[in-house]
Length: 203
Length: 243
Image (cartoon, rainbow over all chains, first blue to last red; front, side, top):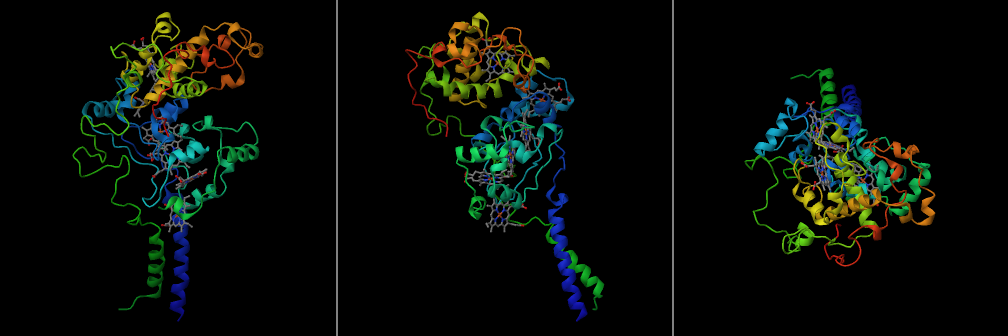
């Protein structure tokens, strides 16, 4: 008898441990900078040179995907700049041989979740809100947990996270008026809905 | 066989905990999403190139003026193939700041941030030759590149290329504008030459110092002030708007 109770109690403890592990930054891989075939740095390209996200992630405002830029995009500059750099040899080789660079994916939702960039960008959610200060990351890491709870927290109350259309790609954004006022106005102007039905994201 | 209570409970804890670590089948389904690699195709990509000569619906580029910036004789066109209004110029400004300003600078003087890091310096848009150049030439440079500058056809779609050209025309116009070109109420807002740029202007992210605001108008040039934008040839286009 005592063994049965013991197993139940410990089973519950296991369940709690499961929760702890699933929520841990270890399981969600938050803050874990990924090794990449080329040490591409957003800190250099965005932070110090001020290149807009959309120069490289061209389709972010009109499709589901932001996409990783093709090698040609790098060559726009690196055909002239740092042409002797051995760090950049894989880029030049990819351009010569037409073989893709194999970037390691950082943000990866499960396949049963539907996500769409353009709707977020159009309704006023900035890159920074979901991806953090990319301009301060030498190697890219995942900033939020990407758990369902994280999506829902915003979907149920988007107003605190909205910004004007011309500030979408700004890093280190500070609202120029109180966020309560701005958020409420943008909710109206952009006709922002509160989408928390299951089929918004599972379809 | 007898399992000790301690081993049994340890097993129970671990088996529940293990659930937290496993990636289940639904997580990684056997399907392709954009840019996902493929073991099936020799080049390792899941995306396929269209067969050469393929024309997607709605992209038959018969309209050489719109798609190539050339007239029937193959010469650069002088007038915009789209109607240019304030909205187009604002779109052009946004796209210009993303794709061109890193090298050409926000005001088109050719002193963008990448140039300061060693890229070949492009000519200023405000030199006489480029002020006289037909709009078709600018479109052609974006589409096919020019010397050290590679093309931007994959990054900027045709309608946006025209918007950028319209904005470059506005920049050229603004650079040479006279105070009398401005509406009365805007004149008083022009900072006197030599005045320091405002805080907002200083905090612009791209090339903060390449901008000489002293001869830059405080209000955007009016569409009617853009050479080639008004009058004959600026017929409204029936090209599809981007969704």
